[in-house]
Length: 92
Image (tube, rainbow, N blue to C red; front, side):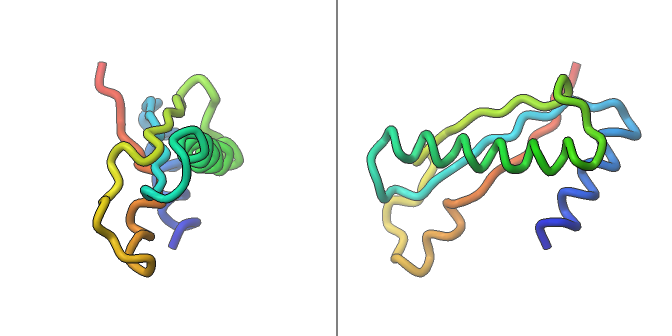
């Protein structure tokens, strides 16, 4: 579930003083501008959840891909995989 995944990431980030990038994604429906905005809202929602669990703002970068990595052939009921936020860890 969402809360458990975010909690596990927050624990790891805090324990290892890690830095992450949260990439927001959208499906292909809607305008490019709308999808960029939606992707940004998704990435910020994950950032806010991590912040609530003690992760410092300086450790989190948010980026929106919009529909750039969407599956263009998805059916209406299968587009959910495109509506997501991906967390990647930065390596120094």
